[in-house]
Length: 336
Image (cartoon, rainbow, N blue to C red; front, top):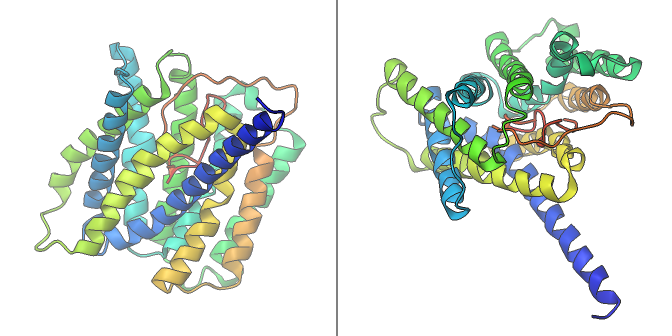
């Protein structure tokens, strides 16, 4: 083999993960647009149920192809049931309800606050995450960014408080869910794919119970909202997880976690360009401040030792997902 061959192979490999990284950012960024379009033809719970159903289908196919198997043990399944609620069923539904009254751009920016919520919660839930001055400063900067996005100096004029609160609550649910997962499912020894398939499948069952109680079948099914829900599930919830696992395995969780910072940018661009959503100057400025603060809250001393044991994922999204290296092998707050 010529000396140039290893270099060429290395370049190809790097290009490959970068392409997948870009695809992941696009899929998760466009998820907020898909939610918005989906809610134009379906009730929010129906959008979430469809999303989870198609996402589960993709993950089940991957599980069969890889000849992996589902986890065993009542304890693991019990923890997965809670994780499914906190990281999938609840935040996905909250974002769908939020986008009935707020633009997809604002929902995408609210999603980026997950690391800020995570740091606040970690102060009491995870002793190894005690704050440094840099991380505390990041929390304060992120809070300023949120106020900037919401236009606090104008008395939140023109802002739908309920929709915004639901989107922020969804991000808070992601943060709670990740802390729960890190404390209960980090050392199961089960593969990422097995845990993710089980978690999303359980969330689908949860929505299968809830959806008929609060919604009725639509009088007609419009093709565009249906395609949006299919894309949201198959791409944003199923295929995106598989992409993320590959990127994490190849370049590590720290690099993979950078996708979080592209999601609100893409969500904003898509909302303005394709949905004609109005954008004032404070929205992108506040988003930049939020992301800067989120990045600082995820900074860790170089001596901190991280683990890479498998855990499930949502986005999160979203979602679940969503910034910073997730200590158990995936990324916090990256999912929608």
